[in-house]
Structure formats: C-alpha cells, structure tokens
Amino acid sequence: MEWILIILGAVIVYSVVTYFYQRRIMKTLSEEEFKAGYRKAQLIDVREPNEFEGGHILGARNIPLSQLRHRYKEIRPDKPVYLYCQNSVRSGRAAQLLKRKGYNDIYNLKGGFKKWTGKIKVGK
Image 1: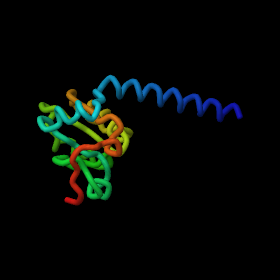
Image 2: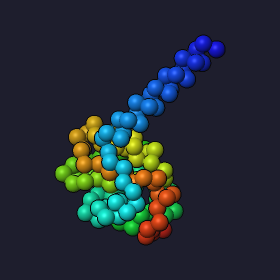
Image 3: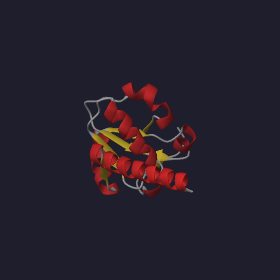
C-alpha cells in the first residue's frame, strides 16, 4: 500500500510540473485569438493521419506527434508555430519537443480541435 501512495504521489508531482512547464513555453489561445493569428503562422495538426483526414482546420499541415521527433525540421524556427490536437494534450507534448529543439514562438489552441467551430476540411 505504501508503494502505491509513493507512485501516485510521483505521478501527481510529474503531472503538475509538466502542466506548469507547458504553460511557460507555449501560449494557449482562445479560438478567437487562434483565428486572428494562424494564417500568418505555421499551423500544425499533431494528431494521427486518420484523425486529420476525418477533419482538420483549413490550412493545417499534419505532422503527428508520433513523427515529430524526425520531422520537426519541416517547421521553420523563425516563424510562429500554431499547434493543435484533439484536446490539447498532444500539442503540449509537441511544444515541449519543439522548445528543446530551439523553437520559441509556440501557440496552442485551447480545447483543441474538438472545441473548434471555424472552417474545417475533410479528407486530404
């Protein structure tokens, strides 16, 4: 029982530290703020291809989180990066990876694609 509490405590501490780190390295934007800036930025959908093909924000490029470690050089470090996923978990992890690779101008869509009410495209 004691080990379970220690592990649970460690998971909670890790989650809290990760949450605050992500908030520091990327700015989370409301849908209105996101719409105002994403056309002048690199819009990256970090969901898997089947999710992307099921519907994505018009103009987005699909670079899944599972491939980002090998494909991050497709994203320019000198331009803002607007990330989104289904609900903001994967985009937070993507932001951490990009920050480690030297990217600084990183934004995230609050609530992710499932909260998006703007224009979308289905299929490729």
